[in-house]
Length: 247
Ligand SMILES: Nc1ncnc2c1ncn2[C@@H]1O[C@H](COP(=O)(O)OP(=O)(O)O)[C@@H](O)[C@H]1O
Ligand SMILES: [Mg+2]
Image (cartoon, protein in one colour):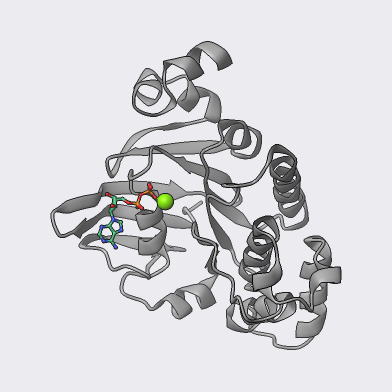
């Protein structure tokens, strides 16, 4: 089977900074793939290149076998790629419901019937029904994150990109989020997820495969177990204390 998404020799230069260097990754249909690596490794830039927020300096991005290089973000979203942002940014002066409605209207769905029903379903899934009339700006951070996830899910994506969805959450909120992801997988068997996350427990409990970026390049890839015990990864990212405590 063809990969759902593939990057080929993907490269992005910002002035003198080579943020992403010849990155070749394949995201297979239905997997939950983790993208990890130290701060500044180029993870968010890879997301920006996939979603059309940034243009590659060179290289290509293929979705379902076709190049999407140079397409505008809204066109890429229509094709079935939705994302959340590392710096959470729901539409703050809009209600929770309106935020999700935006995802539903700009996403992949061609059928615009029953939109209200689709919104209700997402609100219910995220436990936000009772908050639907509140402005996003009046919600605590963890619920703003859920609103972003809701907006992304509204697009009914084939590929969902989550950029550090759990940063800033406490352990209870984190385990709720992990549970949410697992439920999401069970109820949307055809959804593929690419997730950037720093908490290794989360990565090992939700990802079937992991890719490690370092200085804009792929340093390692494999199952969470393989990657988390890879000496190179421990050296540049996880640190010795991690290897002693977890292995
Ligand atoms: N818009 C930009 N302009 C200039 N440099 C950038 C820009 N975006 C990212 N960078 C640089 O690219 C590198 C990778 O950043 P980023 O993709 O945000 O890493 P990560 O998400 O892995 O922490 C960093 O050195 C960062 O400073
Ligand atoms: Mg980042």
